[in-house]
Image (cartoon, rainbow, N blue to C red; front, side, top):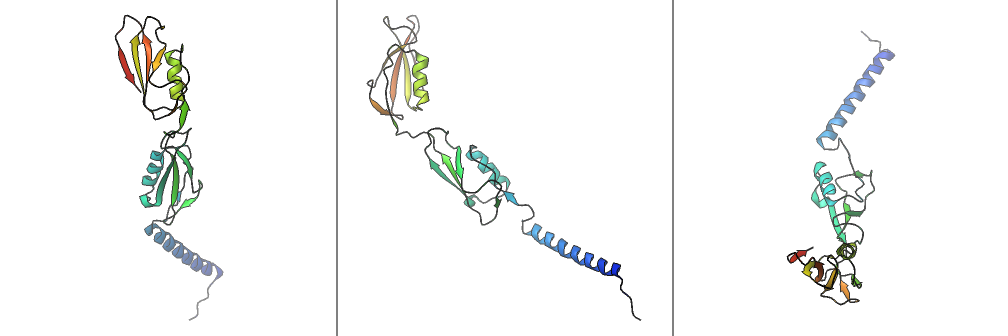
Length: 185
């Protein structure tokens, strides 16, 4: 007995075959961990912690992400300056993401110390902060000749060239009725 196959029957057979192939492919991809692609974020301007959170969340091996540090006068330490992979790129098991991070301001950069005579504490401290000095100690002592809150002296010569990492002691005038105080930054 011969059976007649209709067009509808052929379409059902083809559809079943396609579903079987699709289901098998999806299953194999899921088993291989490729069911959801990892996309590289734009990390520029963000922190190293942000990159590490992304790496951990996406189960990326630490050997696939490397960090290079370089001094940067504008960005704080551990801020991402650039990355080798564009944002939106798919990250695969063969990918290597190189992140350039700020190491902060270069401690060996030199500055000429200005004359702080007659300047107040706020302005002097602002100068050291602006130039990112790291080892300035502020000391307060009484003086009958200097206005309270103003600069008295420092242990470096005015006009001297010093590295921003140099240890510098700056003395300000405190009111005559107060106690001596030492503050370090």
